[in-house]
Amino acid sequence: MERINIMIADDHEVIHNGIRDILRSKSNYTIVGNAYDGKEAIAKALELKPDIILMDISMPKLNGIEAIKEISKRLPKTKMLALTQHEEDEYILQIMKAGGSGYLLKNAKRDEFIEAIESVVQGKRYLSSKLSERMINNVLEQAESTESRSQDEIHLTRREIEIIQKIADDKSNLEIADELHLSVRTVETHRRNLMQKLKVNSVVALLKYATQNNIITFD
Image (tube, rainbow, N blue to C red; front, side, top):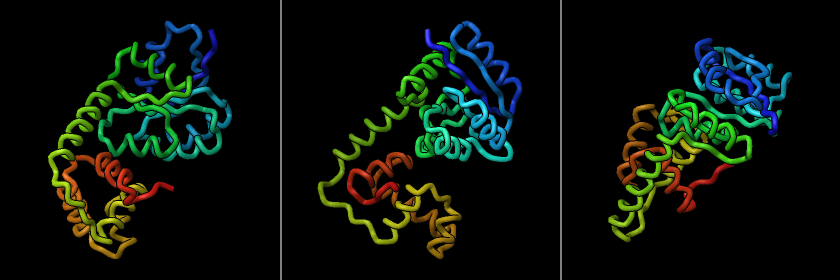
């Protein structure tokens, strides 16, 4: 049985202890290090070069998304599994764009923890079962919405296309407003109008539509 070296990055000791208890039964799992903030996670990762890092998103000094982005550049063979309580689609998208291989909720059961780790180590992507079900339902709803829409082409203004591209580039409303010389309220209005015009109810669905219709590109 191949040994899997695991590093845990979370700012709460209780999480470290809980994961250690969950993985104790797997003799080939070895927890080689612990980090309690984003900067420490990067330093420990470079020192230990683990097979996989369980990374919290919300940590002091540097958040988990930025830590994943930096580690993925410098240790491309190390797999990273986001471990979080956040269920929002935007976080999932940010983690995957940063270089993460999976997204697991902290309230997952022991069997799902192990399934997620083994899937990611094998080079697969993993999404928490609760989130997978929700996203499948979103896709089905989107498909039904698309079928019910008029066959007429939906025309987007130049400004709307700029807004979508900025969203795809992971820009916040404030950053978009600064770059396009608009007010934050105007950006919020554009986002709301886009969702209504395209009849989507999440950022993931918005970006999926824009990608499928060659409206935006990802660098």
